[in-house]
Image (cartoon, rainbow, N blue to C red; front, top):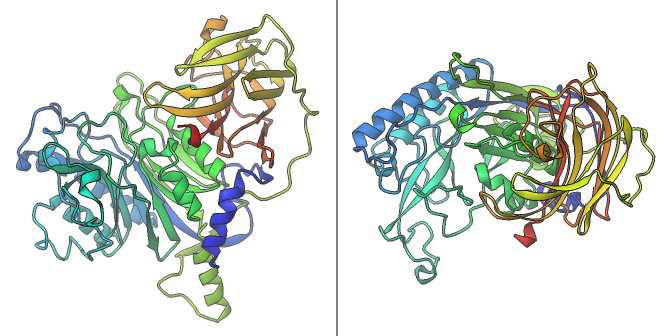
Length: 537
């Protein structure tokens, strides 16, 4: 049994097994080990001002080349800083808000790299109308980078690359072709390494859901294997959890994420998935202020670097390049390197460019218990109420004292909180503990179990659950819930969109999840245990 297969078993039971995560701050700590340099670019996308009007191929290419020029500049900057892989965002080359017809001039047919070896840079005449693919391929080759980008794909129907699919069960779209939201991966020599068609579309009428689920991975010589998924996919079982079940612990995440406070801002969910799934996440978002799009990062279980832009009137909207050396998490690759070293091999194609530190992903002893055991019985109080948060009806209880404990339940889910609050400057900020167990039905339908400590936006209970970015109150807390799912993603959001890392996260075999933190550097906006009940979707 390979280490990756063994790891897949470990990941599958991770949510059921006792596991503790200790705070490591913003720098990688732990025993030295192989590392690599990753880059993500948050792109200020240049949009087509009339996306519903069809363009000629020449006009569409002229538009896309303006964005690709920026990509070229950022790939060069990343390479100068030693990056070995760079990720660009979803929709970053072509934009968004197209109709099925109006995106036609932007489409290129992307060959399946599982069935065909192709280097668009060195073989430009092999396929027609592939100017964007050629540009990306040459970019990767020129800067010796693995490069991930997102673009629209045109495929014949039925799919010739999947001849075993029964066309009678997969009728073609009315126009007789498939149009996919697609991630492409190029090796550092420019060859096409992977192609992924987005599974979970978010109001993208120009694209089709692929007729067959794709669970896509690719291998690199410097860090082993990566998985790929896109934007809205992060909230669903397929393909995200399927990648975890295959033992993949390094994820590529192009996105065009619109921030939604208080639970689903971009950097918040990115950090939560990295911690909850114990993976590296390379997340590249768009920068588009009118759509509340910003928030990119490089997250591992032990360290992170991230960016969330704040728009101030008169200031330009700008992109942001992030570069960070991070530990390799692919167990098979690490085992191969260890064996090679043991045999006295020195260097070679598979060796990382430098050494770093692996951190303590999911390891370490829990901190000494800062709080006593929490009472499971909620006490009747006029401070308990219902309110809508992000379209879901939460059960809430107010935090009325400077310290204490609360329990609030929604059906089978009970959330427990022990807290000590340190108001700054005598502020009277209102906080509430909320619980929700049920189906989320706004802008998507999926089943949730959520425990959330939130700052209310005002002094009235009606303001609890509303969007707020700033807070002054520091909070030492222990938040705990007993969940009916093993897929629970923890997050902490501080004032000014600071994504803090909890001191301790513990999961037990009976579904209990505990998050503990003290000594905050910023006021608390949200602390959340976000449980996804995939089998009830």
